[in-house]
Every structure is written in structure tokens, then in C-alpha cells.
Length: 303
Image (tube, rainbow, N blue to C red; front, side, top):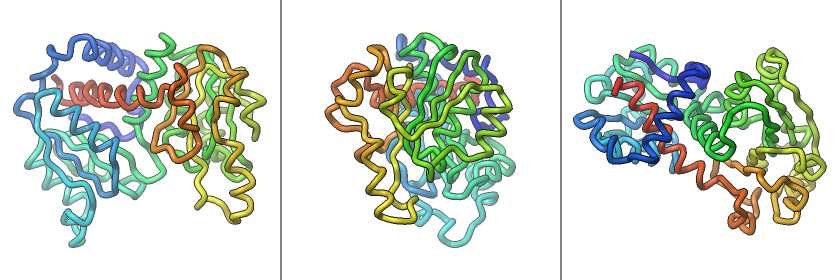
């Protein structure tokens, strides 16, 4: 029995195999429609989620399995004070696999230590979101045909963005990856990500506050929202927020085959006018997320 808490719990070889499975699911959905017949996924969502929870549920239903669970802590025994460890032991008696989201970093690890069935981390605080990273990797692979030798720009909130940290960690294992880190001074990539991942893996990287000056170099642009609540002053937020809104105008100097990704939800950091641009991939990412969650469920259930 195995759980997935962090993207590095999967080797690059395993990710390659899962991408292969995912592509086969896309081409032959009928072949997989009863792979998890008789199996139950428990979705334990201690904080709100639209995409991730529904994506896991859709994934399990499309594999022929069933879903039980809850969508907020107030509708679970956590409201009565039950610990994550006890919840994991109890749910192990009802289901075959757990997908769990929790506001506290490390909660998924505690659940995995106490469950007798596989646990998938569906996001734990600002720490990890491995299945979003799997969605990102499948999107990059389907758009580019590879996961190596490219320049990836991360733009927006790079300090608190768990999806950014996870994807940098995943890409650190592929050759020829150059990072361009675009953010205001207040929201730069944390020093531990820089030291423990980027520098440790000898990744080439460049930091800037100006998106337009570097957009022409990028093969992938990974947008995130600049969150008002992260700033000490409203004035500072208002000064910076528009520098990180992607518009058709800013895309004029970008490559024709740029791929624009965003983990969603979007607020205003990508203009809706960009949605019709063939380079916009963020809604494809949503579909790819469901497919990669199907591949991961199959892997962990040995199907």
C-alpha cells in the first residue's frame, strides 16, 4: 500500500508511465470504464474546493467506481474535535482509497501514517498539491511533446503559491530547464525553494519584476494571482497588481507556440480576451487534471 503526499513521491519514470496511461485513457476511455468497479474513493475535504474535489469524483466515476465523503470540515466529525489520525482510521473501514484536502501543512502525511488504505494529498495548506502538478505535467507534455529543454516563466505570487513550488520541484528532475521567476519583491520565491530545489539541482534561473521584458523568451508561462491579502499596504497592492495582468497586448512579443498555464481559480490576472488565444491552455489543464487523477487512482489501487 502506498500514498502520494508530495510530487517527489513519484519518480520521473513513474510520472512518464502515468502520462502514457493518461494518453491511453484519452484515446480509449471505454477500456477504463470498469477498471475500478466495486471500489470506493473517499473525498475528505476539510476546506472548500471546486475543481479538485469534482475532478477526483469525476475520475473515480469514469473508472466505474463509487465516491463517498464530505466537502467541508463542518459536515464531518472534525467539527466535534476528531483528529485527522482517527478520521483516517475510520474511513479506512469504508473505502479503498482517500483523497484529502486540509488547511494544515502535514495533515495528509498524518492521515497516510494512520490509514490502512492509500491516501492522496489533494492540497495541504501552502505545502503541496501533487495532483495539480500532475495536471500541469500532462498539459506541458501534451502541448510540447516533452518535459525537458524549455524555459518556464512563473508569474505572480511565487511566495505562497504551493502549485508553483510543486511544479518547480517536479521540473528540477528534467534536463535543460530554465526558470524565469516574475514577481514583485514581496512575493518572490521563498529562499528554501531557491536553495533546496533550484540551486541544489543546478537549475538555471533568473528573477525579474517585469513580465513584458521576458515574455518573448518563454516556452511556458505559468500565471498565478497576486493576492491583495498578502500586501502590507493597499497602496503597494494597487501599484503592482496591474503589472501582472496578462492581456493580448502583452502577448504580442511572445512566441507563437507559447503555452499559458494557470492552476485556477482566476480572478483578473489573465484577461478574458486571452481565452480565445490558441496559446491559452488553462481549461485544457482542468481536463488533464481529471485524466491524471484517473491514472493515479489506477496506479495506487493496482488496477
